[in-house]
Length: 277
Image: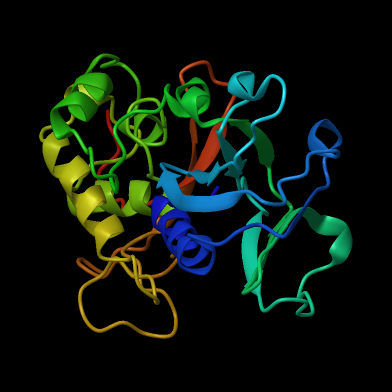
């Protein structure tokens, strides 16, 4: 799944292109919302919440029968999962992805926004947003970030491995595998170490937040130094390459969740991050 910085950038692009614009046509290519027509609605804004995108709209004035019972604010909720993304084109512009993968098309007088291969797509009253994202922990890139609450949620399950806990969006929202692996490396902690045995959990969380915040622009990296065309990471994706600190060979492994049913790749330096005994 995408990292929180990717969702932040996507929300920023969509907000710049659509905020304040009136929807001239909409096309939801999922059965549940296939007949929904948002023409005449105004895009109030687009905000990220962890790895979720919330596109908030306000409705046109309606004084007809039952108008007071109709929601005047709706939210298009999407989650990219592994393959999804939102693309912005000039009005009527040619799409750069196959049309059969489009799940949502929003047209305005200045731009077309197309959501391709979206893992989740739904429309809910804005007042009900909490029902879809209320379970998420504090957002590392959000304006309401609460470090104390995030740490409390992480420490509530001391036997869960820190590598798995950092990916649990119910504990803190926005960390993916890249920042999970590299923030553990920066603290010299093996991802398989239980949360309750991590010497300085606060440092890992703060490093993850710092790395996410440093990558809101183009060119992702977690290492020090100037940005390059290719991402520069401490350990993520660097299997069999030398550690940037000690020269040992970076390893890749699998880390299972508490119930043993989910396994995710981990990258680590066996010398800088010794495996728990």
